[in-house]
Length: 260
Image (cartoon, rainbow, N blue to C red; front, side, top):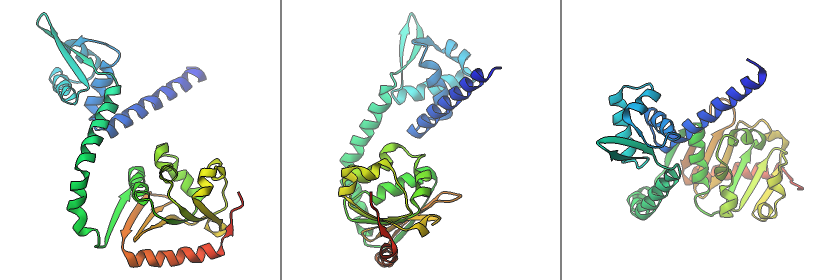
């Protein structure tokens, strides 16, 4: 096998892994993913032909097809007594997500009302992995309020590169003002007028190896690790937020204004 063939196979493998991961995050099981992907390029096809293309018993394939039918990702028609199945257009995946989003938005005020009684109480939430990091950043920038954060930006960039682009740009999209103390760093975003307008930044070289990124927003503190295992916490407590704000102010006084 020559090098070009090896590279092609490696890229194809990574491409398939990306698809499987995306569909799994969407909510499909491994069997549903295999059957759906097998169906996509085939058009209308009967159960017997589908079973030849996936390594599952016919009863498993049939049950999986019914699950996909319920999710609107497969359609079926009957011709001369034979049932044919066809994968729905991939755009259906987005349509389904939009429908779920609209449904949740309608009931969100009711859900918030149920939680209102606990808003003033203290709590600690622990998250792990990239999905947990996405949840933390969404909480930090959920409300348009002054935010403070400090830590090693260079290490944080490595953590954030595994997240979808929209997660990394939430603050800019919502125009949330922030004061930041980080190690010396430069990137294209820092030079944008929209970024400068809502950001005060200082550099502090001693934060280069700081093992966490710390955010203070309202009466909340969010922290995620920057080395080894990815763990994050959200602390909802006014006194903790005030204490971390004092620490932030110390770093702020030691930092040098970023001339960008």
